[in-house]
Image (tube, rainbow, N blue to C red):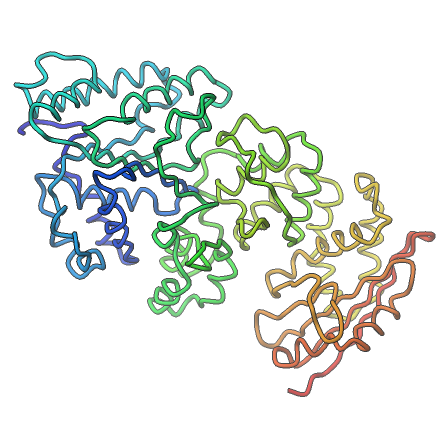
Length: 527
């Protein structure tokens, strides 16, 4: 097997994984190999992993390429890693024909899908002809060439495909091109005896084809259903804690605020891996992940014209969880039917996190992206609340009742799009948005069980030295009634072991006068 190879058993197949190991920050995800080994040459040999960008998909694929590719010697790279403990580790180590392809290189906007298929097929056939010249004999059909090698030489192939879904991301609305691409994948992989394993990665799950059967042999591992592959993409809390030992510049609390918030069954909290690595390497937390995006997808999707979408996004920015039906999503980015499909797409893109039928914005990094997008779009009341939220928080800390009321009154003048402002639910949403800036300093819990009732909002301090805050809202009553309820029902007990001081905040909105009344009382807690 001399000469140059485009895809088949490339001599540099271990380079990507070697570079990862050479880096200063490494988290061992090599147990993934045990999961893929047990699927080789079984009915579960078709795997599709979909995760947001920069969630470790390509690094995992590079590790698999280093491990499986025949003709290279990668054993030393895995010395001391978890994969080495696997029962089948040495059975499959560098013992397979591996075809590694990044579809981005062949299905960008510079050519048609047909041209991309032809160019990629031609190069892979050249690889096969180079490796098996006595078998191919000038044959030009890719699937037939692979089948000929399998039948004549008894050799099969592992396919490692990165960015499988690029056609659906760069060719939105081009249904014929999309279906031609899916047809190519079906003919290449479905029911083919030469396939030992197909491992595909992308951002989107497999497109729901009109026949429902094009690629139905794939086992999918998505943000909604990560299943047994959940531990291998994103960093767990224990992994982040260990990484924190590499630096004194950042605490686990800071990393949790910025990059935590995703949830995986049987794993728990999951952090954005790219951002954690960048933050530890640079010694500071900023929105690293958002800067890696190549297109303004968030702005494009949240401005879709569907009933309830703007209200849902507003509630999410306010820190609320909302119910979503994820079953209708058709796994592309241009066939939305309602607000739930848009929200489901944002889950797959990593902007939202999903658990037990509910969705929310996972962390500060993504909250900033939503807030910046909304400010850019000039969403009236929402944009204004976000811009003035720091002012409101500082007025609360100063116990400045008039300044608080002034901010709320000013915002009220911009409430035209909230036609139903005169109800308690919308009032709560507005107040939550108004305290957007508090999320940097507090963990906000809405409708929190406390004492003998349920508080509208309790703000748990993230750092020592700042007071806890309890907010109670009233509608057509009085701010004093709100303060009395906080005291009488013992909400303050929720903060007894957390803060030395608590600010009790009562807010009332009078429908007739359209005025807000605010009262603040500082209480010392004897811990």
